[in-house]
Image (tube, rainbow, N blue to C red; front, side, top):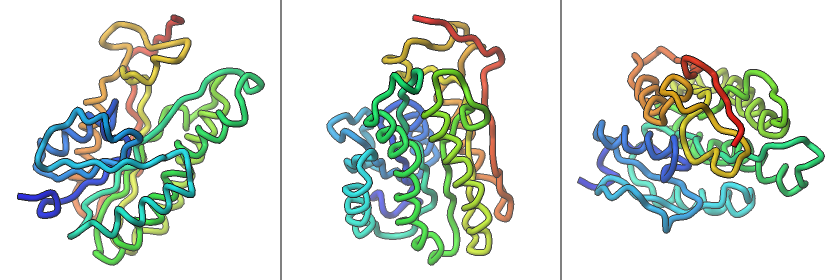
Length: 238
C-alpha cells in the first residue's frame, strides 16, 4: 500500500527529536507520514509508508514555493498537519544577532503560518482534519535568556487559538501541545539541559502519545491546548 492510500499525516521536523517520535507513533498506528525536513539526507525512518521532502523552514520565500510544489504532489486526503519544527537560540537579548532573531521567528512561527495557510484550503475542502502545533511551556511564561524563543512560542500559541476559532465550522480541529523539558538533541548547543532523572525530563515518545490522543478524540471534540511536563522541573548548567 502506498503512502497516498493510507490516511496521511504531514509532520514538519519529522527526522529528529519530537518529530521523529511522532513519525514512528503514526506509522505504528498505520498512518502514512510525509515529513517536511531541513536536511533530507538525514533519514532515520526506513518505512514504506514514510517519505520526506526537504524544505527550509527559516526562509519564508523559498518555503512558500516549495510547499506549493509538495501540495501538488499529494493524492488523497490529509488526515492531519503537525507543525512541529523548531529551533532554539538562548541568551540575553543583546547577545543575539539580528540573524538569530530572524531564524527563530521564521522557523518557530512564520514557517508554521505559511505551511498552515497552504494546507488549510485542502483541509476545508475535504471537510475534516486536524492541525496540531508543537508549542512549548515557554509559550506560557517568559523566562530569563529566552526572550526571542519565548516570543516565537507565544506567537504560535496566539495563532493556534485564533485559528481554532476560524476553523470549527469547516470541521477542522486545531490543537496546541506545550511540552516542558524534553530529552532531545535540542539542548546540545545550549548552556543548560534538564536534569538526569527520569522524572526531570519527558521523553519525545510522551509527546507523540499526546498527538495520538489528540487525533483519536471523538469527532466534534477538540483538545484545544495540552501542557505536558516532567514531574520535577530540574535544570542544570553544562
